[in-house]
Image (cartoon, rainbow, N blue to C red):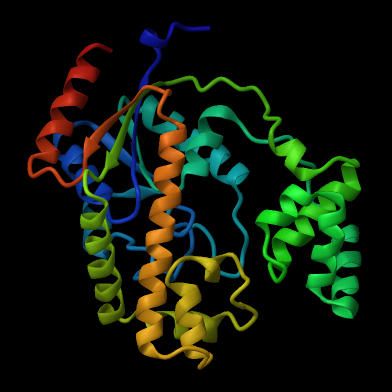
Length: 319
């Protein structure tokens, strides 16, 4: 195994939503021989552009991004798929004597890429069909109660109406005779064959980040988020608020508005609140990764780009 100092470098640029990751990534592209690899579980979906803050066409034409627009919104995309595809792209970028710049806020993907994945069994079509038929008769809350008897820890973090996660947790329990909570604590040991330059954008004032989040969500509404969601639902009629794509922040609230369950003011307020909660979870993940050599930068600093470019230059010089 190579010493870390002799491994090819990759750059991780992490941070909560609205912390300015995309802008900094473009600054780095201008300064260094890097290619952007998206680490965003929402940007993998085609047609979901406004609510995911996906780069516009002009930016994508000028600066290609890997791992966006991979699947339609009615499809599923897993951390395992991300890990496999990201490693392929990083290898290809490295072979072309460039550096992969991994940018995003999906912390689970960053962790899966570096540490491997939990040892969970693959999906079992027959068992899933059996659980779906049972749910049609008894309802998903009843299956949630069954899960609570088998895996209380998983049931505590899964909502009684979250059919996808209830089904998966029960499937794991029934296939392995172990709880998913236990298995999630067991990961496949794996080497990450690159030297990480890890950067995290952290706000020095949470209130300022909250202000950015509100402005950003209001801008998405003004740019046509509701029309985007309506067009997606017309094109993919099987989608529901429980579909993974429609559970993304902003999309779920827009669905509720289109279904006349909330009004436009509630859509705005709920969307901003959900985005703030997402940012809070992202910051919690980053705190849990603090001992992994991550260099933190204040995302509110006026000279943020200069600070980061200087730090990256220093770290690359040592390669």
